[in-house]
Length: 356
Image 1 (spheres, one colour):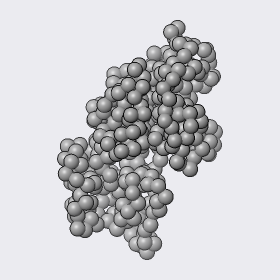
Image 2 (cartoon, helix red, strand yellow):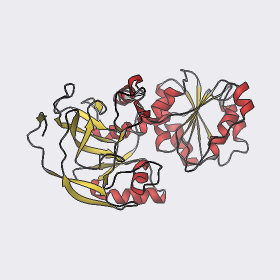
Image 3 (cartoon, helix red, strand yellow):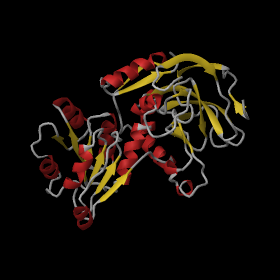
Image 4 (cartoon, one colour):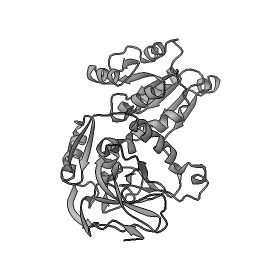
């Protein structure tokens, strides 16, 4: 190993490997990689399973995917080795592998802490091997620093789902006391968005469909719930839910279909901000130019958080303000989780335990 390593790092490990586009994943033994000078090796204890991991296996995003590939980008574990240039992480520290595994750190974006839009990023579980293995490599500058009092299984989804919606809420520029509509509030991302918004002092209008989703959203702190499946006029209902009838100050779009992206500009208040996060396939954003101009509406995208966003998102969790239902399953059963995803039968977050 490089400069410093724990004495018990094995040469081989169990991993779930995508060997061909479309899968399935193959549970097999592979070598344990050695960290480079600016990298750390993390003994992954738990890793959340995100829908992006399914896209990576299927190769259906307009991004080149590595093959063979170890997926996963919500990996929480313990640092067991570090490169010779790494001085601010110790062996035994808790750390996490997130979607942005590394960036160039020298481009105009990285210099402004906008590393999420670096032209040459390394993406965990997509362009570099991720966290569905017992030992994963991460760039030391980018791995998440996890406090020792955090539960590693529970914190794992914060590294992607939690961080993504926290960043989106920051991008909305909503201030405490303002109203934020969260579209797709009953889903995996939405469950985190509602909690972060509440912790940030925001009133949330949860938009989703069905009584089950309504109950979940209200339990997670939603101020009001608008059911798109039963609403006769969703624009009017969302505006009414904002209190003064002018509409929410911001809209966070987590939807997986195109229609909500077209509706948002109709109910957001003047000078409001629409933040696009969800990635429905082949979808487009459409808004009336006249209204957008004269009402001074902002429409923007939000991708993943930077290093500071990560620290802040984890701190909310550490203080007990963010919780999410999850189920721990063995790493060996990852394909079963993917099969449930394909059938739309996932409730909460599945976390794989790499020891099994």
